[in-house]
Length: 607
Image (cartoon, rainbow, N blue to C red; front, side):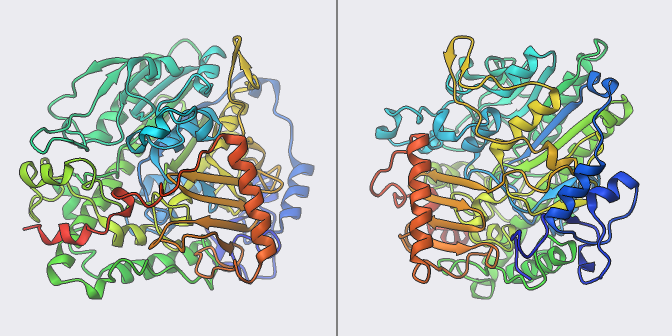
């Protein structure tokens, strides 16, 4: 059975019983939801579409009058297979329950980096159109002089919270912003009524320490703003808990006027530095001593049982630039196992805070009228920030990265390429790359209206589809290319509401999407994809994959299908021209961050 093809696999199927695919009885998911039946197995895309269209009813006027609340939750650098609903062993009961209430996307795409994803999430437009042709931290001097590469969310963007607020919604956010650090680029000037924002790309989870320094004896400091004004965080700060508490306080503060709300909860977990409470870490200590290959195999088996991947799926087993588990020294194994335990603890703590917000919505009577959308901003992160500026030397001098202190305040650890590749199971590579491991992310969406429950879809969708979806739920029409007399980037995404409610089997008639960041590129059209990465990560040339048979991108078909390659390269060229992509020779191979090969050397220094 091959993956992700409309010809060989359904676009929508029961998630809880996907292992029963061989049964002869097939029940339409959309009909099952409408009739109150339990889904037994997959149906064809055409069956799902036809039956759902025939059975669907128009909402009543009373339904239209009570517009839904929307809770948008974004995890930071969460891997594709980390949470339980996508195959992981990490305890995520709240996200697992959300999956039972809604629809899991196996082919949901983001950018391979944090801020470009967030720019597309807010604007519905390509990142190059709205100021994030690259992350601000990685822009070269030549890029900074170009339109589309400003490093903040520009006025070309029309953030959808602006439109929601105009339409009578309360708009709240708490967590990571990463769309410009100045006050004029802060959430209040992008449509948010109440906000508590960590403005940078990352920070400590227990204090205000930042992540990149250019002075080995100067500790970087993260910038926080509440309603645009700079603030200091409290002494008992814990990032996931604090962000959830702030969001709850904003929701409570706006109650009583009958307005619906949009709430954006943007965790900084599980982004490095890896930090969690001791009690949470202890739950996972020793669990990862078995190493990369065993955890990958266990996850893959669970993914098959859940229907996330086909039964004959062969995973990408890890990039040859990096050692396998059995090639590590005993010391390296101990360090990496501990770091993964901390990472898992961070994910569990994040999940607990999601549960606290959801439970609060239930207590105040808003849960049944709240759409909940969850996704990660990119793939798992196997890169290192230590090559940036003087960060490595600063960490040596001023952080305690001993094995015993790993995960505690004052530590500054990443979990490296080995575990990131496990997090990407079954895909290739991780954050910063255009292979599936960098851009395919876990996504779970649930609507309060009559919608699919405990189901999964293989229909491809993209982060630019989120804004149009939320606006349609709110009954708001995007204005197009002009807003209040100024030119804005038109939303390029498509609403997913019809898919989420079982009225359609796809979001896009043909999924057509391009990517470019820091000189690495990709284009997917239907089930075919081209991708380019510098050596040693790729060949340096365009590679071609048939994702319907090879989602793990193990078999490059460029030489066997030159016409298809040429066709997709032309599609990419059109994408690049339409969105203002500017290429620079050598950009992808510049030293540092995603080209560093020093992770295990740094591990050797841990005591």
